[in-house]
Amino acid sequence: MGLLTGKKALVSGVANPRSIAWGIAQVFHEHGARVAFTCLESTQRRVAKLAAELDSDLVFPCDVAKDEDIARTFEKVGEAFDGHLHVFVHSIAYARLEEMSGEFLNVTREGWRLALDVSAYSLVAMARAARPLMKAAGGGSIMTLTFAGGNRVAPGYNMMGVAKAALESAVRYLAYDLGPDGIRVNALSPGPIPTVSGMVTQGFEESLQFTTTHSPLLRSITPRDVGNVAVWYAADISSAVTGATVPIDGGMGLLLAGAAAHPRARKPVSERP
Ligand SMILES: NC(=O)c1ccc[n+]([C@@H]2O[C@H](COP(=O)([O-])OP(=O)(O)OC[C@H]3O[C@@H](n4cnc5c(N)ncnc54)[C@H](O)[C@@H]3O)[C@@H](O)[C@H]2O)c1
Image 1 (cartoon, protein in one colour):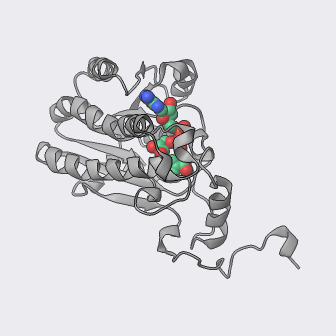
Image 2: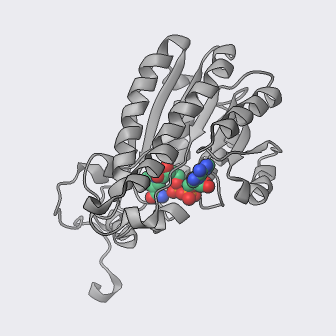
């Protein structure tokens, strides 16, 4: 314990207690980090209550589609943290529902723009704003959340898959630019987790169930599982890791399409002797 003692962290993307970012913030706190939050204004009161559970009163509203919000947020973070920031978690994504159903072929110009802006460009804009605070701190760690649907076809993930591909590429280019400043940039790639954003994805329940019967670990993934890897990225013990994407999927990505259920999976109730 205490891998993050003395670290100042900004966590984005907490909307409610199911958010992956909330699992990350909890584990950061347990490891001794001071955690500030940034969230949409519409969720600010709820996030402030959660933040208080981690002894934090630092909650800054920010719509990442607005440059002025990003600038103001990092200014406030600088004031609260004496000009220093060690860790930034980007856990934000958005696509319109019509861009996440039916044929990908029907994606609209506006739907494409919106999803790429909020889900991928925002990482670049926020990394740029974090840079001076992290340089002042002697280096830092930036991480974002992606999904395997950015590399392969996850039916229905559609526009968000394209946004995740852009996001993962941005991670590599940012890692290249910021490495000389001692700032590392990485991605976390969890399997399906029942959050508000996750559950609207077509076929979500089936893929959640699938991980419990097919993945080597025979269980689904929790926000705290993601938080544990996030601590590793945030801590000095991963000091030479940058531009990486770690799957947190119970080994699901090892399987070929069409793989049968794991022979040691618990059978559905209806098939048990
Ligand atoms: N849930 C899953 O199965 C899963 C799997 C892999 C990756 N992810 C990724 O994890 C990240 C977090 O998602 P989650 O599953 O915790 O769901 P969530 O709905 O709890 O989090 C998404 C967050 O994005 C924020 N957001 C959306 N538009 C915004 C804007 N314009 N400005 C600021 N914030 C905005 C929301 O307020 C919310 O806090 C996303 O990038 C998502 O794609 C989720």
